[in-house]
Length: 151
Image (cartoon, rainbow, N blue to C red; front, side, top):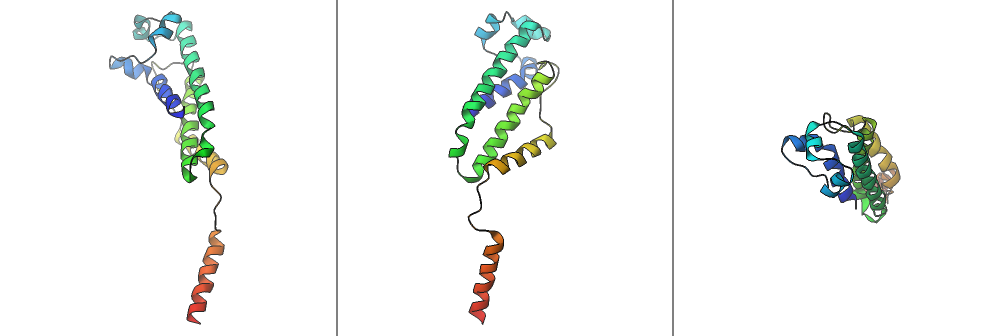
């Protein structure tokens, strides 16, 4: 589910860039249901109809993030941290998109580097595996072992 959530986030982030390349990845059935036409997209205006469409898709992506996060504890070791941090960063793109009124025509939603580092740090504290050997204890053991061999 996280992969699908991230892909949908990419689609939502890149609507304006994709339009400039002649591509539309927004679901046609949802465009129709919200009364948004291709001409509306090419006009590049964030209308109330368009805002409802993007809000619905952001909500769907957030549901997928929620479901996908349930599987993170099953990942091995450091993979948990990386996947959890990536999910949080991608969901941050949705936050930025919402913060700016769902305008993905004239700006690209993003998460600043400092915020990504903060998210990584937070996920390390939650998901990083506890070390099986304390590095100080290990070093001390190795020192005593070597001292015993030479003495």
